[in-house]
Amino acid sequence: MEQYKNYINGQFRGSKNTFLSINPTTEESWAKISAANEEDVNDAVQAAFDAFNGGWSKSLPQQRIKVLRSIGDKLIENAELLGTIETKDTGKLFKETKFQANYIAEFYYYYAGLVDKIEGSTLPIDKPEMQVFTTRVPVGVVAAIIPWNSQMFLTAVKLAPALAMGNTIIIKASEIAPATLFEFAKIIDTLDIPKGVINIITGFADECGKILTSHPKVDRIAFTGGMQTAKHIVRNSAENLSQVTLELGGKSPVAVFNDARIDNALNGVTASIFGASGQSCIAGSRLYLQNKIYDEFLEKISNKAKSIKIGDPMIDSTQMGPLATIDQLKNIQEKIDKTVKQGGKIITGGEREDEFKKGWFFKPTIIECEHHNLPV
Image 1 (cartoon, one colour):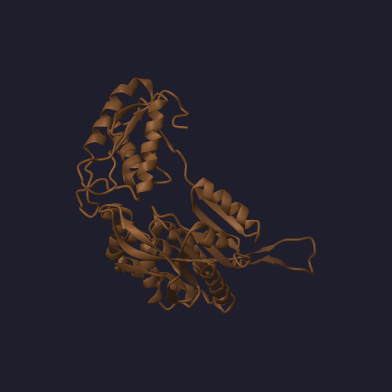
Image 2 (cartoon, rainbow, N blue to C red; image 1 turned 135 degrees about the vertical axis):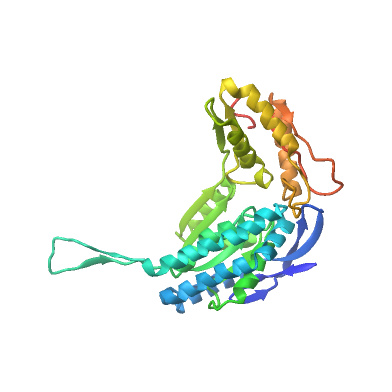
């Protein structure tokens, strides 16, 4: 069984508490993860704080450029490894996770290109004997809280700009599937990056997340995830008055009108909801059809849903893998059952895929609802 430990101040260290990560394709435990506690979080924040004040905040642009480019290079070099681990841990399609590991290297290259172009300005005032100017300075210690479903991408959009400006960071990986970020930590550890600049931990709400987001030495919180967790983060941040950025998911509507190119619309709708097994904060989970095309489009999209090939996410021909957790599967089934009780009509799917003996597979599902407020 794989062993993953928190990465704090340039060292991998275990914790008193551990939990198992389960492969959603096989339902088998495959990795043991160290769960960060209050001591671990405090040490990670202190390491980031010391690294910030110890020189990283005043590092030369050339040093930060070199670091960012080296991360991008290593992502490309290790794309297959990172993709394999992410697929094993989350059930996402390997062709997607491998592509994403390659693709996100561009974010690090982009911010590397911005490092030596960060400029201030001079401001005209009514006192000729004085000069007024602005200068941009790093914020300080950043706490980046990452969800499981697009973790390498959502790490890149937080980590790359933070490093470019001279900030240090604690990345809090989701406890649902953190293995990929710990593989990423192994890559970081091979690079010439000062200790404490990047720290990667995982853990549960009170023992880890609450301590991190209320810590007095955290200056900025960047969170991607659900609304309930976001409410806790806002309350916690009152303790340290840190800057907070919240990127929250929603029930994204897709509307198709009479003049649409039907084949293009069908492909777009299918990808928007069934990609990543529907586990995306930008999933097109509500579909509105204009009356004239309603019946035709509903029939065609139902046929496309039925034809989606479900299976092992490591196989190239697979179009949809399993759900990430058994809790997610149960949650979906409960919502479908509730919708049907409220008048929803299942057009296709609505139940577990029974072709496999193991794995949290669920059939692509389309439900026709008369009212906008279903499910509640």
